[in-house]
Structure formats: structure tokens, C-alpha cells
Length: 258
Image (cartoon, rainbow, N blue to C red; front, side):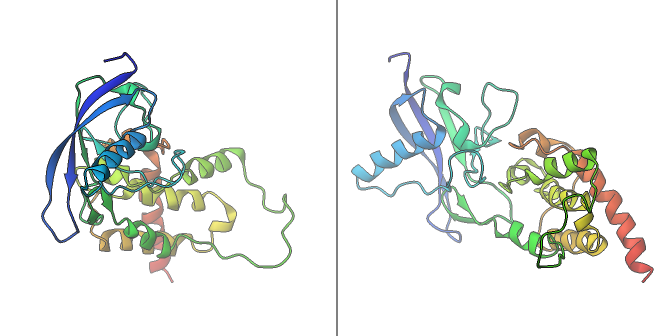
């Protein structure tokens, strides 16, 4: 093979629908360019399957720019896969130059009860939406925009809020956690609102409701193993979970006192 082209074996999870049994199926993919993204390589596989009259592999994707978080799959046991960089990335930003000619690559969906398989590699992540709906909002007065300096926010808090708000809700944290915990996601959503003055009125009730919804969806408990932060493509810091725990204790005292 040319140094820029590879032949690969893909071991892909195939499942026709959520309530049907699934299995791993091997496919040969030839002539894969090292410049391709992982999703482009999956497109190449699907084109060959379509030509043969076989069902293409279903997988989620949208922006393909590392922004939306839709492209979640587990590659060789690692959510989104792991490239040569020490920094985690999204699947769409993982390039085939991180693999070698002749490699056998396993591709699986997020495996967590709250993320039921829709088909093949596509899963339903609506549980995250319901956690947001349970309390991830703020109350604001409509009308004229307030003066920019009327609510002073320190740079430390602004940076902290922004870092937490970069969470794209891809679900890699859940897929990596042995307990299928969604605490990194939930903590990120709670923290970015808790840092800003606009998020204070609902702060105690927000965390109670969002944690309650997290548990009701069937996500597991957090043991602070750190696997979630290690695979997060937006590098959400693990200490947002510590802040969540402190806020939860504080909110229980405040709510019980009313």
C-alpha cells in the first residue's frame, strides 16, 4: 500500500433496532486515506455497502466540526477514540493518520441504559435533554437589554462559567464511566449557571431538580474515578462535580429551611 493509503478491518456493532439483538460484524475497507476523518472513513464503508445492496451502518453526525457532539461512538474501547494527541477529541475530528495499515478497529455505540440504541451506532440521548428541562434555565426580565456593567462578574467566575458552558452534551463521559454516570455533564450545566448572577434565583431548586432527573433517568452514581474528564473533548474539569456536591448540600439546607 501507499504510505497515504491503508487497508483496514472494521468490527462494527450492527443492531437493526433498539429491541432487537445485535452483534459485531467485520468489514474490510480498502484504500483509506490517512487524511480522512473517521466519519469520512465510515462514509466510505457505507458507500461500498450500498453498492453491494447491503444496509449501511447507521451513525449520528451533524456539524463534523467538533461542535455539536452528535458523532459519539466508542472506538477500540475509548469514547470518540484516541489519537496521538494527549487531548481528547470528537469522533469527527479524529483522523485516520492515527491508525495503521492492517489495523482491526472496533466501533460500538455508547453503552448505557439511559442511552438506548436506536439502530447500529446511533443512540437516543434524550435523557440529557430532560435533565436540562428539569432545571437548566434562568429567569430574566424581557424588554430592554440591561446595562452591561449593572451586574459585575469577576473574571475568575466568568472564565469558570465559560469553561463549564463549553460542554456539548456528547455523552462520552457516560460511555467512559464504569457506572454510566452523567455527573460530569450535569455538573457542567449546573456550574455554568451557578457562576453568574442571573442564575442565582433558581440555584437551590435547579440542582435538586436536575440531580433528581439524572437519577430518575437511570444514570449511575459518581465515584470520582476521572474517566469522564479523561475522554471529554471539551476538557470539562473534574472539579465541577465537587462544586455540584457542595451546591447540593447547600441547596438542601436552604430548601428545607423554607
